[in-house]
Image (cartoon, rainbow, N blue to C red; front, side, top):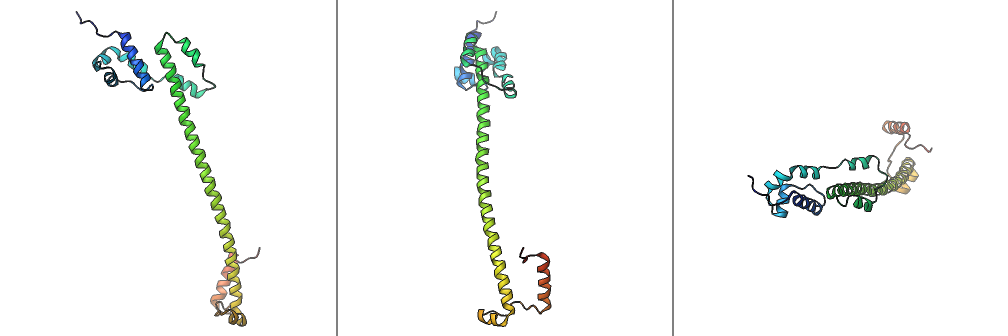
Length: 190
């Protein structure tokens, strides 16, 4: 004849539900139950394994909500419908908790993405401003270069500006340079 049981199944199930709620609907293991209640792990494993597997099983309701979500049912009605069935109530509430956690996670990802987009738009705006400034500087220095180039060929202007003959159009190297520049269109006025 077997020894009488120290704890009823209902008592053990209620402890599991209490600890599931305490641990924010996370997976409940025999080790956690032993730590919280002082009841040996072997009791939880031998007598409550099926109930633990069932209560730790993720519900299919979350997937249903994810694919065709319109609105959450009234929690007051859910509680009233399941007031006598703690396991069903816990399953339903844990489903809502998981669903809300997913929504919260997705919302935080979207918020971070929006912040990053704003930062990138600011960087792009600054880069465009810098690009415009550099274009203006480039045009300015091209004009200066042309002015110096033309001035260096005139002996009077060279003397007035203290220039050496920077660019003599008559040399073969200068002619090759001018041909190359005219092919690139770097100094075209249009």
